[in-house]
Image (cartoon, rainbow, N blue to C red; front, side):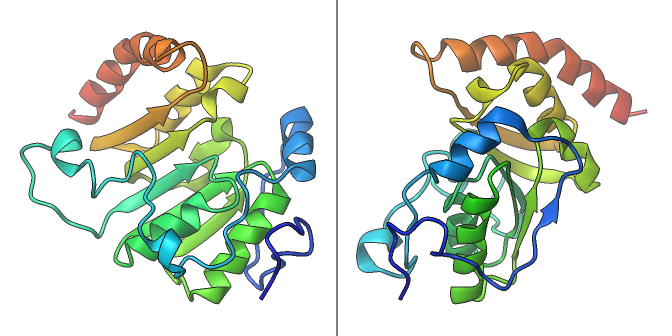
Length: 204
């Protein structure tokens, strides 16, 4: 079994990563050196199986979609997935089609290790910037972006990019570091008009 503390030799899985053509910059360099969060070695361990991300769509279904019956076969994007989050979604929701994107190849290597270890055929990984998410040529029912937007030079632009790949009845779960909920709420307020306009244009 790989040792979680050994960041770069931990997780060279067989799964190939699709890389962005764009220069990834200082944030990527930081997370190449310091893989975050601490890599989980086994998603099936008893103390891990009970863990869910704060925005997990099953836990929050009636908040996100109060008038819709639960279904698991969603197209899910984990934007800034780090070392564990996309694999954890795919492991906990086997009928969902999960895509994880991140800047850090070291973090994605551990995601690839978890994909191979747990045979997560429902998980796809890409090394890419959030601003380039339209390049996936995909739309999603649910997007989780946790602790990521505050790293972007233009957080509002990043959130708009995510909105551009969200299906009309989809939901984005946002968690942003900062003073209370201010960064996330500011982004959402500034995006609201753009999303309303985009949603209206899709109807015609």
